[in-house]
Image (cartoon, rainbow, N blue to C red; front, side, top):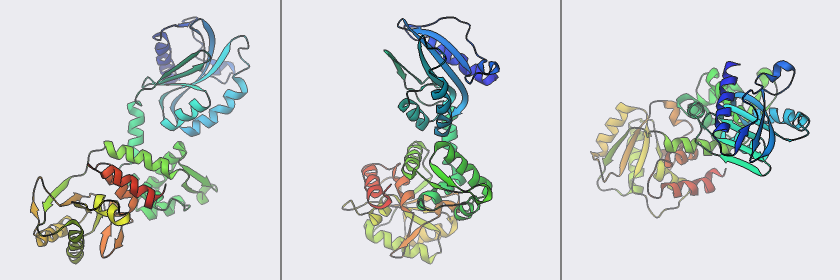
Length: 358
């Protein structure tokens, strides 16, 4: 209750700071549920001299699933409580996910979050303020795409047409069942997954793989890139260097996966040539020996071979061997290209259209 009051007070403060918005009274009903009503606050105000009543529900966080649950209440009661004036339904929360905001606007339900975003679709007094999401939501979203959780997402995207139980997806992605369960619950909140069955037999699969990949790509573009060691290997162009790296790394039993431009070009040819071969590598000692045999020279600029240090073997899940060389899966390649320069984004879009296809 204390948290709901804080959110509602923030909303009231935002209303008071808007031009031509006047609250009918500073005394706002904030404990409506105790009177048997479904809403948390009822606010009477005037916008440009138009009388409006806001029926407000307060939550800590709002995801698409929460919007669907609230719509029934709003539609049932929203037009019956103040017949003499326009009545608007509002959801206010500490954080509201982008997908939830889209749904609320489609249904013409108002919203406000602690980041300062506001949507109030009154007739003749349409208000829309769009600000960056609050840090609490950013942290929540960012955590889904980090470390072990990312392995679960990669497994789901690689096999996006398959149904998985918690135990099965945990085994597939090499994480603890608790981690898999946590990720799947988050996907439910964003409505990126669909489910069937109940209890231990409950299964899920992605219903919106494209939306999940879009969100991950956005996070990837903002994230700190992995540590990268740059080398120059003389006497090889990119295509021949790729095969040469594959032979040497395989001989030294290096756990690796070529990614970014060289991998995208192999999966879905697009550029006339690529200048750099980048590889994710887990086995550091074996990789050092392989790099020494390559006669690779450490450089800061003008490199044609790069090693991306990988902290977890799970980051190399679902790699594919083509022509004797191990490649990261297309989804991982697409994500790695989000940090690239030059024509990397163009190459990523081509890979997604031609190979990933969602």
